[in-house]
Image (cartoon, rainbow, N blue to C red):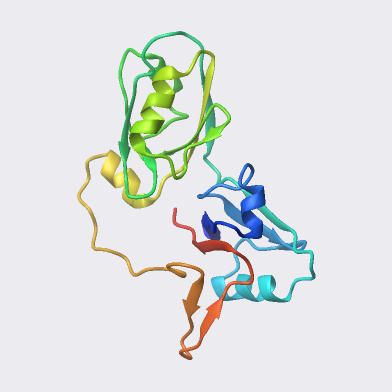
Length: 193
């Protein structure tokens, strides 16, 4: 799939007011009533710059996202690992509550919420403590991970690094050498699948 993926909300910006609803990993679906999916980065940037204000943006989780519910006390049976920017599901331990969610949960998926709490930006150890301290029933929300996260979770070798797509921050250098700042304080990039 293609699209523009939300990377971060800048502190103090307008997007931060919607931090309860916007989380890294979500896809930009609509800009000012115009569908943004399957459009190139430059086309979406143009939409952001020219759309009427106030600007309405619609985000959604990518297909394959899942909420799973754990009812019984005890070990969840999830093997998680930390990457540079997220917490990845590596394995479902056989014979545990997690195995009941096999088929819905897959190695490489990214943990996004524990109950109602987003985990983006939280320290790995803090998320593990949160999981251990959570009562049952407990709902966990996962989204599909990047291809690199899936390969890591499955123990496959890393591929050659791909060139950076989209801006490393909120700036993009165009082929004409000009730098363009996004019309929003939300940092985005082309989504991987």
